Image 1: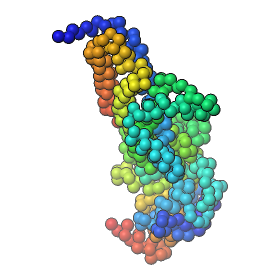
Image 2 (image 1 turned 180 degrees about the vertical axis):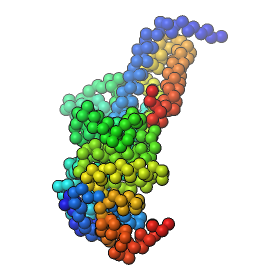
Image 3 (image 1 turned 90 degrees about the horizontal axis):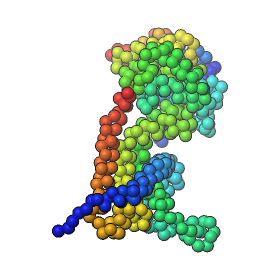
Image 4 (image 1 turned 120 degrees about the vertical axis):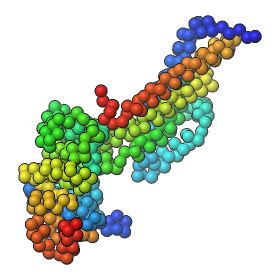
Length: 243
Length: 231
């Protein structure tokens, strides 16, 4: 198991965002996390690379252990890539600079090596012709693809996606999902919080359904969509699939 | 009727230039030192560590509540005592007018720049910290490569405007007999009894330099939007 989540909980003041969540994910698996808003999906995914600290429980991810006492996360960060809802590209750097920064500063790769890698990745996500531009000159879909390339540049074993298409205009969702689909086909272990149920059905191996801070149901994606086991999942699916 | 004779400016020019050089030196030292210590103060003020943030906040509030000329006097009269005490000399060690001016302006401007830099830091979204964090950048790297370049850029026009004020305020060092541009002008004015000519001339120099600088800031401001400043 490349990721195992064991009985983790997390509160913000009186609000309990995660309640005793447990799950395991195998190498190469693609998991979509879905559920109503406020159900703890984003919190769960952010605990996996330590962006959110857990209050109790334990996570092992790619050979690293995360407990409530874990402080130094730098080694973990380069083996777990993350893509954010609002891209969070660095506006003062060019597209190329965005994809090179962590390579040169965190992994201490020589600049020519980092640049070669960045160019290859940007080519791969279809942005080879935009490397000198600044993020603000790109569309949302293009920016999100740069963000994916930026995360991939550190050669992560695992990629986390936190609602990667929620901030995009509808016509740009496809180009980002295509890059993610290709990544999944290449064997990347992926966890993705998303409302794109078509993507979940086509690409995900499994679906985690969350509600109210709990992982309510984990099932193979076809099984989840065809025959959800819990009332809460049935209710959720009936609402999002019939509108 | 008074007779104005501006030809005295020709003889006075080398001395005035020397004065202008000190004025520009004070401005530069105040700017660089102010940005450096101001940035540290800004980080301290935004720190979650109560001790740091309170100390920084007290410093900034006190400095901003005092007249510059008073701080100048303090440094001029107290710094020698302090230095003598630190070195165990048992008597004050003279610091000199130039050093007094440099120290004062760095101390004073740090407080003003701290507030500007703090505004700049707050203008950078929380998501940028998360992104830097997720890429494994250390705290120091995050500030140096991600946060500061954006923060400074966002407040650059205000920083430069404050620097123009600093350039003008540097004329106060004349009270500790430092020969800056105004000091040089006033010495010649009194020696030759040519007060009107000298003060008009020196006023023009301050005006031309400040005005040009503020036009440049305006120009820069329009070019600062991201992605447009490229050739």
